[in-house]
Picture 1 (cartoon, rainbow, N blue to C red):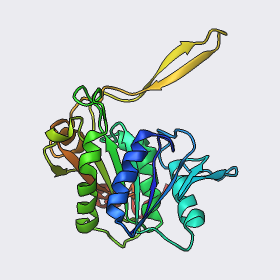
Picture 2: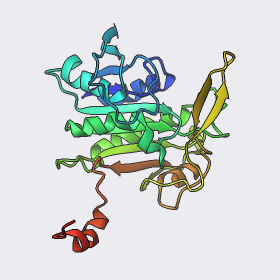
Picture 3: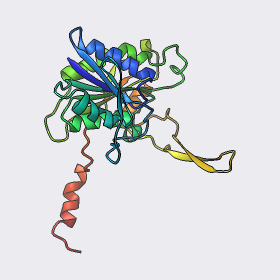
Picture 4: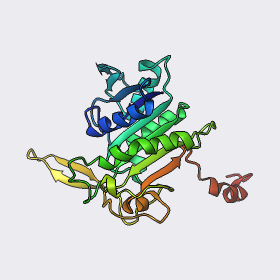
Length: 265
């Protein structure tokens, strides 16, 4: 199997090394793992792509490339430049340092890479490691992802519903904030929503008197509803969420059409 890996934490991030281990296990002895990752951290850029200026790319090792762009840019570079003519069988993104559960999904460059992969017609899986008091100070804070990542990805590859429709399925995986031995298995769940917490800004003034704003997130230990990602993660389970990039609120269409269709201003 030929696998393309990327992330949003940058090419030197420890989570990318964990992902390379997982990908190598999945690819097998005769497989290939290609790394095309951002030269610098790109957390929070979502599905951003760069089409207003050139994107620099540099080979930094065997099958290893750094791109001065977003994770979605890296997928484009991997598919249409680095691996042109040798398309991957699978795209993996991560392992992100921090969860991409609930509303974090919408901001995530890790997810953005998989959105682009799915739009390009490739099987894509995002992997993230939730952090909390039970794992943040471990010698290996990625322990849950490292130990359980290969089996989780292999199950999704073998049993996932890899659709051929226009907005293809991709998968969002979050490993719980616990040591590997405390992981309680996989839960297939929906994307959740953390109530009473959201992103905001914190103003600060520099020594030169200039005013700056730091974007900051809310508490991450807030559980979402049962049957959703963060709820499963905080219960010690690996969440697997099938996703599509189609943003249509399909449940609203019939009622809205009954009121609006055929009307004039």
